[in-house]
Image 1 (cartoon, rainbow, N blue to C red):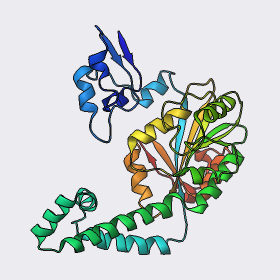
Image 2 (image 1 turned 60 degrees about the horizontal axis):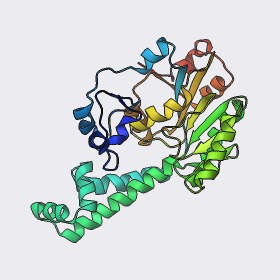
Image 3 (image 1 turned 45 degrees about the vertical axis):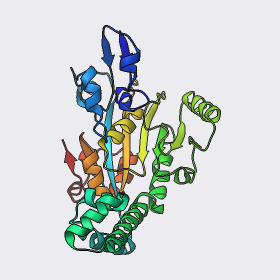
Image 4 (image 1 turned 90 degrees about the vertical axis):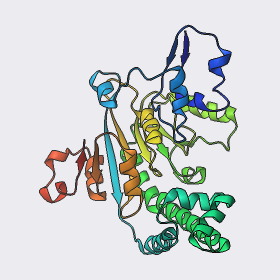
Length: 312
């Protein structure tokens, strides 16, 4: 029997030869996220079609994963700069009929861009300029949201309130992860040996913080983790499921908490909704303080409850 864990990885050019190189009579593939952003999971299904799927709820109900609370924390900031960037972004986006694929291809594919320009009777250089401006404003918009300094402030508040827990944070970049004043940072800037030691030391701790960008998105098995903070998310449900998996490991009596920090009024709100397939609770900053004090939602005043949304 051939057993493949994290099976979504074997669709890559590097690993897909395993089906030809290894002789087997039976095959068992396991993964938390069968779907891939490039759609190549269809290649894997040719050799090992999906025969069973287990939802997070089913796993929790059966005692295979810890119970959890998924919080979308809405953060209010001055959006003057963001709104101006977003206005320009939409202006450039309109040249591509608000179609992401067209805009992206015009940014990266010369032949496609020239054909697109010709079909619309436009100048190739003009379309290229618009595509570059679209890309630039898209990146500026993302940078404003995912790296906003208030997220660091909120993350520190959560970590201080959960100082008796083992916590993990996910930032947009290693530079952002290094700004968190608690715990160690696991990154590609360090040697494999250094990262291994850092992870082993953290694994043996009863409480503490480990910070990362993408290094621990999947595959890491860390004992005792119960709190996760996503400072920079996106619309990928695959990435969220993998990150969620870090804190859902079964521990007796544990209720895991995942806090995703979202700048209200930005594209991060739709990103979160697109990435989330489980029930979640939306909190404002005042309600976050109450949650961190372990106050039950049911005890809150009506004016606070009306701002909380539950999705199932």
